[in-house]
Length: 326
DNA sequence: CACTTGACCTGTCCGC
DNA sequence: TGCGGACAGGTCAAGT
Image (cartoon, rainbow, N blue to C red):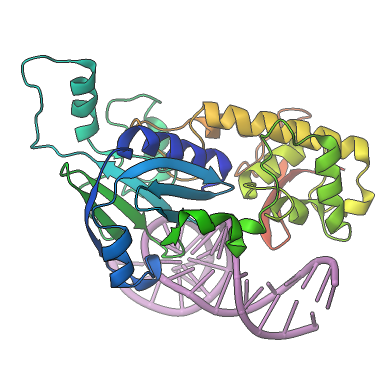
């Protein structure tokens, strides 16, 4: 669910909010959420200052000046939420841009696409984008909080994860290129150097699999998940269950073109999610308003008017217009 | 070897 | 109203 555009949105939010913050304490309630030893935490996290926030596929990389990095995978329901220090008021006389920024920061700001809330999907939709009460986060920590990092400033970075699939882990920054799970990840789809020639070569490695399975394979192309696989296959008029060997090069070139523009638009809109979503500014992302097939089963295809159906491909819920997608 | 399925988890929703 | 079960989907290990 947090896929490339959502993780990118989180990254941009964190970049603005936590770079320069120094970690002074760490607590976690679920060992798998943060498997490093206590001595690692003490040695490489305590007192370390965050210097950069990067992304590779769906993985967040929070670089520290200890030469270690905090690697974060949100998996299905992970969230990174930064809450500034409310009691701290700096530069009370002059309301500089920085101060205003800090004041805004002191409100709960989520960088997460997957905000779990107590509000149902129905009531979520009733709020317009940009509604002042769009923040869907209550008091933190809450019961989904797995890891809390407290900063010298008093701010807190919460890693929330309802389903406990996600994790964060300390690794030496210099070793990251050699870390197995990062090393295996395929090309970033939005890189200019990743053109149709490269995409076709990558996808053809999975010639006997369905095109959807190939797209979801992180070693083929980085960062694509269920939403953007379904959406780009609809845009390119390809049935998700089609074997890769039965998809022409021309169709694959179209698929990449559509994928790129869908990912770009989604980042522009702050990402999407089938559930509650707010971006780093505490507002909802709006890509869900642009979705053509995902979670639209029973509704009409905007292109041909046929009914969108939900089926199962590559073990995933799959949304398709049978008339458009052959 | 290539590919598919099951496990990891919890909250929500649906039917009885 | 309560309860059981299906479902949601990213990734890895295990199975075919």
